[in-house]
Image (cartoon, rainbow, N blue to C red; front, side, top):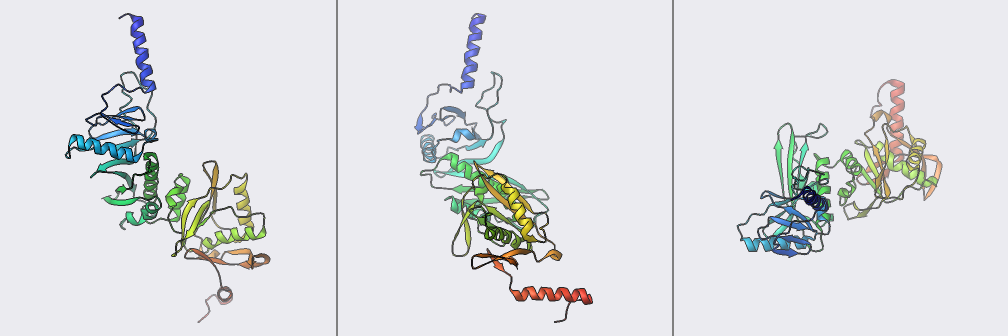
Length: 400
């Protein structure tokens, strides 16, 4: 072969690699846009070849596009019938990133160098399962002696996404953290692997953010990291308020309402968080987050929120954090209220809403009660004033 011919062959090989043309194989089975040889070693997913290395079938995130869960289950069942009931299936391990630009002697189907995502699919007793694995490090924010109740933590999210918990294993590593493995079942009808994979990432993010029960800090972390859908199915409570729309800052009523939403958590023991862009629905026992309703992008909206809160809430809330977080082409607004010192309480709102009208000469004190905002009774306000006067005059609390 001449040098010119050798160069031409190498050029064609390089083009074939970059174009991801599969090497021709005797494909035995076809289900939708999935193909496999009779041994289940070579696979084609959307025309891209992947290999089962006997311990894992490594794929990329983008390989899952347009892959039906029903077709994948059919493929597994065909292979099991052909190979026999004793044949062991490898998990489909999903890896992140792009195939690297590598020398010619590297097979682009070998993906071991790319990082795993912690989400995979397995096949067990004729059914395809979603598997999530993550390591949760111990944190000083949480009681590491308390068992992590995975089922309770992720149940609202599973219910919302029509998924079912098969098993949850927590393997402790003393003084380090916990290895969590969750196996999820689902009806594959009308489900796509790419959507199920996204669900798995949300579950993983929820587990990683919550080394204990869901908290103000972990909710904020989930929203900032782009996993707001992990909150679907979660209830409002003592520290979480969700609103589907912006506060109406064009009216005095809207400004007072915003100040009340926030000040109720300043008066609470543990603080709280207000999220604008989440819809709720009453389920009998309280309001539950049911839908993400991102808000139209508005220039300068963060500054407007901060100005209203600074002018309406007395005294100013320490370390108040107002963030506008992108969600697609729209935004979510996250207002995080850390716990406040008792000496600064109660926090007052300059103004009150009476029969739907703003009363600027009034003030209001609101507190959080379960998942609702409650006004402070005048008798409680008077009692606080009495205690304060007695302490100033005599240096001691009044006798009761």
